[in-house]
Structure formats: structure tokens, C-alpha cells
Length: 77
Image (cartoon, rainbow, N blue to C red; front, side):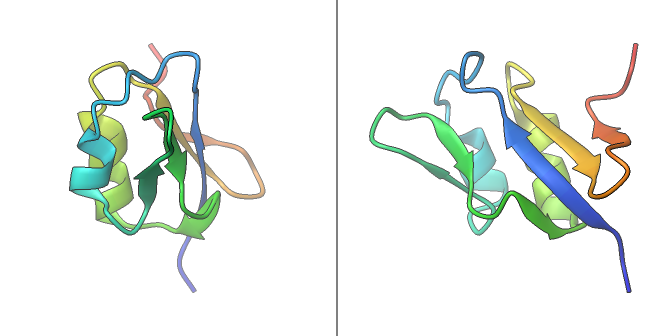
């Protein structure tokens, strides 16, 4: 069984660019305020969700290992 990720969007940072929806259409959606939301806050680890987080122009998406909370993205500085 593969890793499970917890996915969060910081709505105070999200600018509604829609890049996350382009990278992972099954993983994110924009609401009526054009703010991103994960379709499912816990998901199987996958490259599309990681690409969405990496492609967010304001780094509003955090991906962590479900259970432990260890951050996968963004990397710690």
C-alpha cells in the first residue's frame, strides 16, 4: 500500500489562478469565490497533486503525509 497524503489549501494565500486544477483536475476545484479546495483532503500520493502544489504561484498548497504530518511540499527552508 502506498503513502496517503493530507492536502490543504491556505485560502488566505490562494489567488485563484486555477493552476492546481490544470495540473490535477481530479484533485482540486475552484469554488464560487475562485478559491481552490482539495476535492478530498486525504488522497493517495500521486504526481498530479504534487505537480499542482509545486505549480501554485503563491505556494498556497501544503501536502503532508497523512498520519505523521511530515511535510512533503513545500520544502522546509
